[in-house]
Image (cartoon, rainbow, N blue to C red):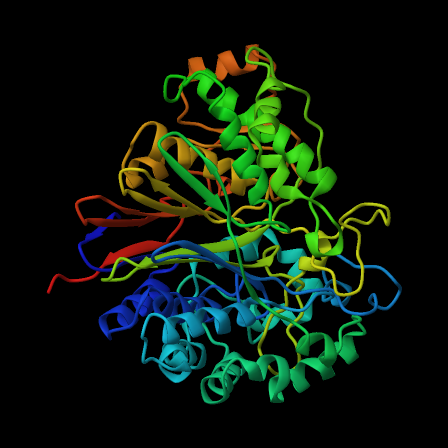
Length: 522
């Protein structure tokens, strides 16, 4: 459902988190406060997708666009056996950057935006919910069903998915009392405790038991930082994203390349072909080169020069699909955003990488750790190969569009390789065709490559795309598979639009159970 207000708006992937963030706005908090409280709540109600043991990126706008990058780094040694795994103890091989990013964001909230809310205010609702429980989400039930074998093999996950040995069912309550204790500890002592206090000690002891290569010193070295966003000129405005090691560089490259192509009829075969072929070229470049720029002298900004963008566009054949046989990067994530009464916006994208992350809950903290270390390339000669203290290539990449006429758009999505693909659909619908966010979010999407369940490397199209369009795409050489309309495989997106007349709109994806709220008028 679309929310509208001339004051604050918020959208998140779970109604309880949305309501929590709105309470912060109603209590006099700002957009950052709303995101912090909502993110904490998602750890309690949506633990298969996000939590304290993951990474996070922020995109903030007040007078300018700012990004905060909270990505954990590799330890000083590899896990036992010298290899990073996809799940289990050997997947717990990078630190978690989310709470480091919370600290940077809260500093801006208090010192620049004048918030008076402390950690006890921001974490209180989540602490109570984790302690007393909440009805299990439809999303968690879906992913439990898909991952039953994995969950059986990873006994830590039984705490999240079972009660007295029985699988949680619709209507059952999810309780996380150990997570509640951790949130209470953070409320009393602040998020530094996660990296340098009693919680850090508990994590370090768990690292030692897992023999995953991380230490307390690695935790203490974790930093989040404010980083200059990257951007390109697009139509009558500017499109922003987050710099490497995040894949937003390739979202921008693909969008900028579209400006060198004719604007097709909305929803036509040519429309989908141009989007697919543009991002296809970007993903090929990403798989070859994306890595932590702190580990090299990579001048990634040069790839956004007009000459390079023109070259990307020239490689797109307007009549035929290029071959595609790249391995995908499935991932699960949450995107959410809030705008406050002052018009300041905070977008937060946070992730455990794959659904249920590493599958390891550390000690008695209730914190499920991410498996983001699986994002390193196994080839030691690859730019994205593992190295001590290095950050892995990252799928997270939220977007912001500032139009010349003052219209502001914020959007992002869950979905690994699907993130730039869904963002291209949203950006073209919102900017090229000036559609309202509810229509943009309902627009049929595509997904190039493997889905979450190791399907074929083809072009998946939602079923409400016109049959004649699908036939034409097949004639152009696309290997097409039809997936249901409003399929969760194409991401859980959200968007906020701030119009020039002061109206604010927010909506979360109709493909999930997320929602949006608008602040009451005074």
